[in-house]
Length: 96
Image (cartoon, rainbow, N blue to C red; front, side, top):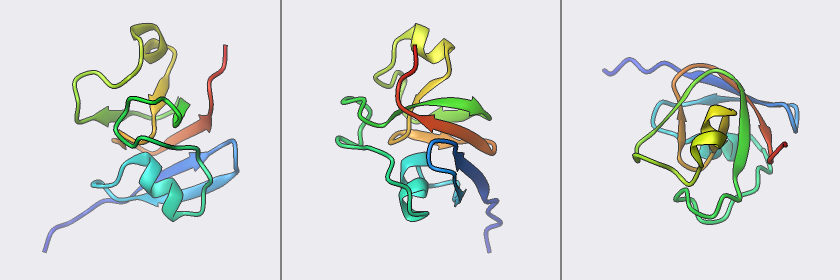
């Protein structure tokens, strides 16, 4: 029996809190929890699911998702390809 640890994701934009399985993307977990987080391509290219990571860490299974280096430094994520490594707090959209 494999021991899996659930993580928590909170969407500040919607005041939604969900559990995240280690194998689920942030977007999948948010959707399963009733979130209306915007999405389209689900492969990290269209940027519809962009959001800002306010707390925590995510990882990607691809070398470079559709974000600029500056956006990554500013904490932007693509929820459709982001896998939480720790409990996370995110907000939808792009903020200057």
